[in-house]
Image 1 (spheres, one colour):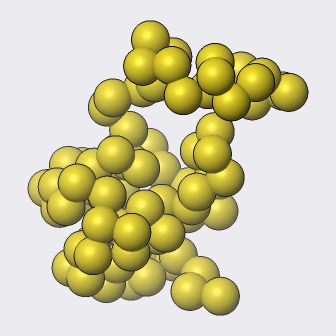
Image 2 (spheres, helix red, strand yellow; image 1 turned 180 degrees about the vertical axis):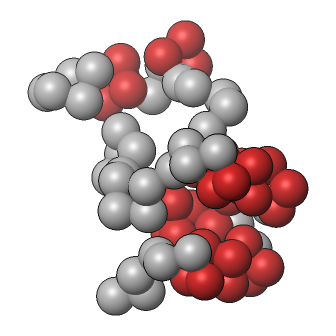
Image 3 (cartoon, rainbow, N blue to C red; image 1 turned 90 degrees about the vertical axis):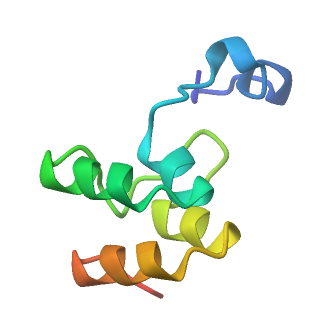
Length: 78
């Protein structure tokens, strides 16, 4: 889907993964984000389909604790 898929397809709920680090970060689910980190199921430099980094998703949601956890785990603030 990321290879030139139209925005209509990318934004269709059918194609959205509801259990991912981006959603957990934006929603403020610190425990879920920590699970992704512990399991190695996140990469701080990989964006979602909309070009959003996990750290940016946390910032979008105003989730300071998650931002601190991600930066402590190696996410680049720049």
